[in-house]
Amino acid sequence: MKKEKPTAKPPKGYIRYSYTRQLPSVKKMTIKEAMEMLRNAGIIVQEEEAEEIMEFLYMLTQITIKEFFSPD
Image 1 (tube, rainbow, N blue to C red):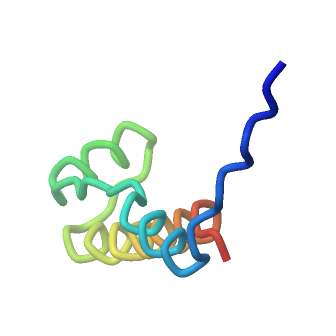
Image 2 (spheres, rainbow, N blue to C red):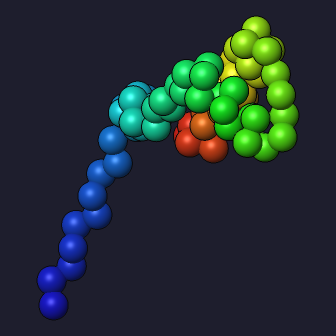
């Protein structure tokens, strides 16, 4: 039986760079789609309110993705 050579790990900076480049992207939905989705859930909002809600949810999604998928 032959002994297998251990494979060398790439430098940590390389892993961080290549890994963060692969973070999933998030598709933004239109304000009309958001308003329709909220209306179906029984929440009636104006267009400006829907924009603010979607901006907040997008920011929260980005933070969550970075928190769970970032190697740090």
